[in-house]
Length: 297
Length: 297
Image 1 (cartoon, rainbow over the protein chains, first blue to last red):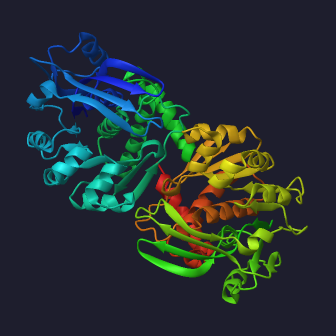
Image 2 (cartoon, rainbow over the protein chains, first blue to last red; image 1 turned 180 degrees about the horizontal axis):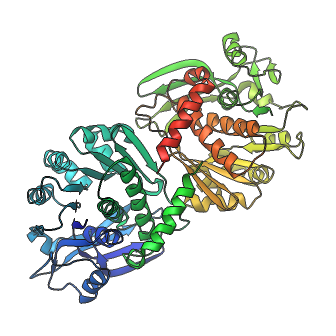
C-alpha cells in the first residue's frame, strides 16, 4: 500500500546552541515524506513558490518521493526560522512567512490514497482533505497549540474523522485539559479515532488503542543536533509502516510506533533533513533491533 | 540474602491539589524498607524521637521490617511538610525539622549487611556507613540537589564507593553538568559504580550498566494521589530484588529496575505509605506482568 503525505514544504533557518543553518529544506510534509519513503511508496501533496530551489526538489525525488502533487505557485515558498534553547526541548520561532501556503488547496490523487497523513495545517484545510478521501482510508492527523487554542471545535471534528491522532504531550494535555497523559488521551479517543499516539520527546512515545497501552522508549542519543522535524518524521514513518503492514492490529500499531521513534531518532542527529534523507532501510532495521534490546527484561 | 536500609524515619504533613494528611509515617528509610520487604528480609537503620507513635512502629513491624537498628533518642522525630503543585511534578517544602536526625550515627549490624541502601542523607554520614561494611557488600546510594550543590566532592567519594547509584534526572544532570541524561550518566559511571539508574518520574527510569542501556516505562496511572516516597520505594524495591536474585548480571538489574518501577507506581496511588504498606507480592507480580505487556512489540 502507498502513502500520501499532506503538509508544508518550506525553507528553514535553524539555530541551536551548537550551530546554525540557513535556507535548508524543511516543512512538516518534507520530514514526514522522507521518513515514510523508507517503508512504502510515498506521494507528497503540498505547495511551493517559484523560488523553490531545484536542489531541494531533486533531494525529495532522489529519495523516491512522488512530487506530482507538489503545486508550484507564483510567489515565495513557506519560510520558517527557529532558535533552540540550551536544553533543545524548547525553541523560539523567529519568523514565519506563510507566503504561498495561504493559497494551499490540497488535491488528493484519486489513486493510492489508502493511507494518508494530514499534517499540522489549519483544521479547515484538514477537513477539506478528508472530504476528498474514500471513507475506508486510514487517516492520521497531527495538530499544534495554535489550532487547539483557536479552533478546538474544528479540530475535534478533524479527530472525529481520523483513524489515528498523533500529538505531543503538551498538545494532548492542552486539548483535553488534563495534566496527565494517561488521562488526556481519553477525551481524544472518545471522539472516535482507533488509536492515539502521544509523543514524549526524549522520553519516547505512548500509544492508546483498544483499551491497551504501549510505551516506546526514547533512544538514548548522547547528543541531539537539531530536533526540527522529529515529530513529523515520527508520524510519517509510523503511518507508512502501517501501510506496509496492510492490516492494522495492536501488534502493527506497536511496531509502527517504534518505527516512528527510530525515524525521529535519526532525524535529530543532524541539522534539517540531512541525516533522515541519508538513512536506509537497513539503518532503520538495525536501530529497530536496538529498540528491542533497550526494553528487554 | 537480606537487606539493610539506612535512611530517615519521620512524621510528614502532605498537601496535594486533591487532599492533605498530617502526622503520617514518612521518611526515605520508611518508604525504601516498606518496598524492600516485598522481596527480602529487611532491616531498617534509622533514628526516631521518644514521640514516635507506637502505631507507626507497629505498621513497620507488622510488615516484617526489622527495627533492631531503629534508635530511639530523647527528643522529637524528624518532621517534614510538603505541598505539591497542580501537576504533582513539583512541590514546595513547607518545613523541615531535623530534630533527632542531627544526632544520627548509623550503626550497621555486622550480620546480613550484604545488600545495603544508603538513602539520601549527608554524604559524610553515608561515608561513615560505608566504612562499617564488608568491602564485598552491594551498596546502593541516593542523594539530592542540596548535597550535589554543597558537598559535591564528598558525594563523588560516596559514588566512588557505591555499587549502584540511583538518582532522578534533575540530580544526574546537576551532578554531571550535562543537559541530556544519556550523557549525564557518564561522569557518574566513570567514578566506579557498576550501574547508574536515573529515575524519570512519570516517564519511568533508565539503567546504564556495562555499556548497555535499559529503559523501563512509566506505569500509565490515570491518577496520582501523592508522589511522596516514590523514589525511595523504587530504590528499596530495586535493591531488595537484587538481594533476592543473589548474583547480579544485566538481566537481574533490568528486572530490578522494573520491580522498582512497580513499587513506585503503587506508592503514588494513595497518601503516604498507605498503598505501599498494603501491597502484597502477588500485587507486585501482577503489575510486573503488566509492565511486560506495556513494552512488548
